[in-house]
Amino acid sequence: MRKFLLLIGGSRDAWATLTPDDWSDSERAHVTLIAQLKQTGEFIECDELNVAPEGARIVRTAHGVTSAADGPLHDGDDFAAGYYLLNCADIERASEIAAHLYESRFAPIEVRQIGA
Image (cartoon, rainbow, N blue to C red; front, top):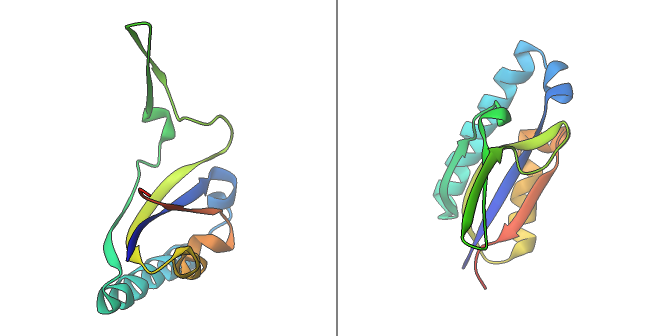
C-alpha cells in the first residue's frame, strides 16, 4: 500500500452555481465515501481547507532571507479546497476514488503519491 493525496480543487464560480440541495448531496456523498473507505482500510483522513484562500501565506527563504506573502500558491480563481489522504494499492485505485468525489463533477482533483 502507498499513501496518496487527493487534492480537491475549488472555484468560486463553480460554487456559486451550487444549490442548497447540491451542498446536501455533496455532504451525503462524502459521508458515504468515507464509510466505504474506512471499511476497505484505505481511509487515513480528509478535511476542508480554509475556503478563503486569501488567508493562505507563501513563505520563501532565499540567501538566508525569509519572506512571506499572501497566498494562495497559484493565482487565479481555482484553489485547493480540501483533501483526502488515503492508503491505496496504486495510483489507478486512488484515481478511481477521486472520480467518486462529488467535486470531480465541477472541479479538478489532483492525485499525488506521497513519497517514493
